[in-house]
Structure formats: C-alpha cells, structure tokens
Image 1 (spheres, chains in turn orange, yellow):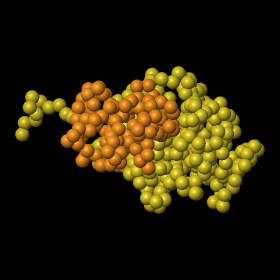
Image 2 (cartoon, one colour):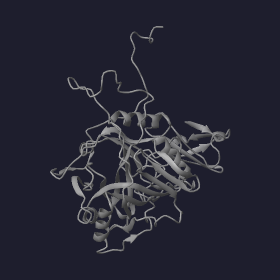
Image 3 (tube, chains in turn green, cyan):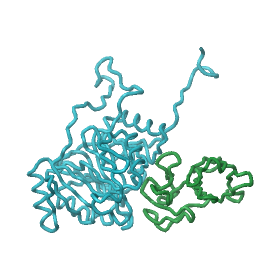
Image 4 (cartoon, chains in turn red, purple):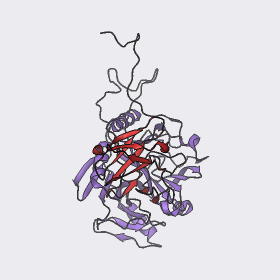
Length: 112
Length: 314
C-alpha cells in the first residue's frame, strides 16, 4: 500500500493518510532519512480516537512529540509510548513502513 | 455567594499561532494579539480565553501534568460578592488582592483561581426562534437560516476539569463557594452552577488519576442549535477535526459539538442549555453513552437527492 513519495514529506513533517480497509488514518512522521508510521488512534479511550486538531496537525508545538489534541497526550515519535497525559505508559499501534528504492513510502506488506 | 462563572480561562500553550488559527476559526475575536505574546480571544459578551506562551513569566505556575490550563478567572456580581469570597477563602489560605482589584488564590487541588467583578457585557441579541405548528416564534417573512448568517460564540459557558478527588472539588466549590449540584453522572462526577447563574452548569468534574489533572474541555454558548450546526460545519469544511458531535446532551439539554484543539483539550460549541433555580431536584445516572446524550450525529458532506437518475434536468 503506497502512501506518498518522500518528496511530499519534507523533513520534520507529518501527514495522515486514509487507507482502504483501515478504520483509522495512518500517521507518517519523517525524521531525516527515517519515517515512522502509527495508527491515528489515541489509546486514552477503548478503541482509540483520532488525534489531530486539523488535517495533518499531529505534533506538539516544538515538533518533539505526537500530540493528541483531545486531551493533551504526548507520544514519543520513535517508540509510540505516551510520556504525558491521560494514557501515560500506553502506546500507539505501530504501522511498519518501508521506503522503496524510488523514494516512495509504503506500508510494509506485513503491516496489515 | 453571588458568583456568575468563568469570565476568562487562561492557558499557557506550546504553539500560540496554532491557537490563534483555531480560536479565530472557532469564532472568537483576537484582542491585543501577537504571535510572540499571544492575546485575549473573546466571545460576543467579552468573556473569553487568554492564550500565552507556556513559558510566559506573567502566568501562574503550570500544573504538573502538562495540561495547559493555567487559571480560571471567575466573575462575581459586585464588590460585595468579591469581599464575601475573600472573607470565606481567607479562613484557610492565602488570598491576594491585586492592584486591579481582583483576588488570587488556589482551590484545594492546586487549580489557580482569580475572582473579579465580572466584566461581561449582557447581550441584546435574541436567541434562535423556532416556528412550531400554531405557535410560530418568527415573524412572517423572517427566514430561519442562510448560508452566510453569523454563528459566533456568544458567552463562555463552562469548563470541565479532570480532578483527582471529586469530593475535595465539591467540598470547595459547593461548600465554600456556594455552587449548587444540578445533576451527577456517577462514575464521572457532578455538574455545578454558581448561585448567580441559572445555567445548568458552569463546572463539571470528572474523577481521574492524578497524572491527568487539568482541563478536559471548555465551551461557549451559541445563539441556538442552528448557529451551532453552522459553526461546526464551517470548522469541518476548513479542515478542523471533530471529537464528538453534533448531538444533544441529556443533563443540561445542551446541544453539543466538540472539536480537538491546540490548547490540548476539547473546545465545544453548546446551545440551548437548561436553566435552573434552587427548586431543582438533582438527578443521577451512571456515566455512559446512554446517559451522555439524547442523540448523536456525525458530519457528512452536503448531498441532495434529485428526480430521475442522472441528476437534475437543465
């Protein structure tokens, strides 16, 4: 499942993608040459709720953490662990990604 | 005690321009705003939100939880009411009287409070009028909705707090400040209204672990459900994200639509909340989807059926 090309994902940026067959968006965060994928589901409530306050607005002000705009939970970008807020100690669900040789970012085939 | 309710909620945020973008889209007026220092965002009656950088030295200390609420500025009816608050709270805590006449203290769980004679300006604006069979409320030829009609938050309605101990919260706001409990969602907590405000609630407390203490959401009153639906729909079309709603709560009867925000809490539009007096007998219901709303809907893009297949004929 292709999500985007690295050129559409500037370093430091974050985007949410709708994916057929998934009930939530997939969040992709780019940090240098690495991309991190997470389901857009804050674990504060059972089943999870989407986190952005507007389209693609998934990070806190300094861009250091993924932030849920419902109740202020902060998650580490690389581990998905909640370090502040209602779901302290819980974590986001990882979506394994791969960067292909042509620069496209895709969900790894084992990631579904 | 002749307390009216929150005049201003003060936040120390980590992204001031994002809050400006969100709150102006929500319909508040930015006053004395700069991206560096923040500003005051007001509804039509002058109540509002003060947004500052989280490291702004003028702010009271932050909660340890990371929640961005820094202070509630609570309006009272007059100077005598302010003195009554000062006399009561000075019994067991430091209450500062600032140069501007306001009081400053903390509640029993470390929420920062200010009290002042309210500066809200009562509005001479009619609420939404509904035409029912045999009982029209609008004059002939007065239309009920237009795409571009104003739909701006009129007045700061309520604040909902995550509190570590509901009994301690009730002990302060009810027993010390004279708030009335209007209803209780067992498992969550009570709704409270101050004596000089008939609204079903200006405060609602939700019991949580200590590490969650802070603001769960805040709300402004709209002029009616049509304004609420229009304002929320405009937010969605501008790319903002709904958290819950639109719908109508049971306790309070208020229409609701919650949006996530860069304030780190939800920001709600509400409309047509019940008002009460001291004859009201408080209700209780277990917190859950059934008690939380009479009905719930979700936004969808505009759509229309037509006559035959293939759309309208030219």
